[in-house]
Length: 160
Image (cartoon, rainbow, N blue to C red; front, side, top):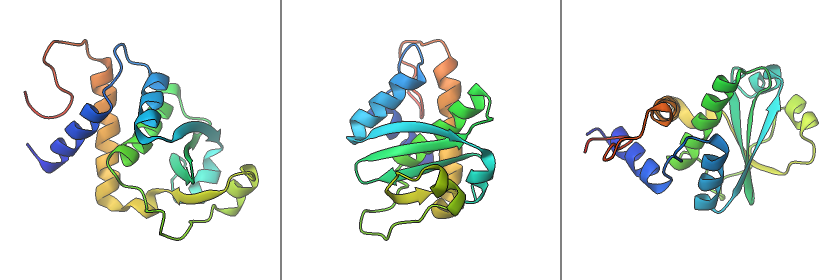
């Protein structure tokens, strides 16, 4: 088993996928595990592009909660993938520490979300290629396993 498989396995054992699959239930479980609420906000893709997110998604870490921002024009399936990608970053420990300086929001996004006191705006540039790849695979695999019929003994990542 690869190190990535082991990390994914740990993440999915920590916060199991709901059966039947329900993204909102999963988000609630992730929030409960992390002790921080998670909310979703859709915005125009060009505002995400300012942060280097190529119009996809962004994790805004605040002092006591998290916000996942995603492209308002994304299809439901694509939005779910973007959200799971950001959850992957959270569960795989890709965030910044509270001791690191706050990351400002780009001007257009800050104007749209003026009431947010953001500690970190975590987009593609903040995570690095390896963490981006891990989060992408996490989202891909989570979507696949969430749609498979449940079988006794099947594990999400790794081998039996």
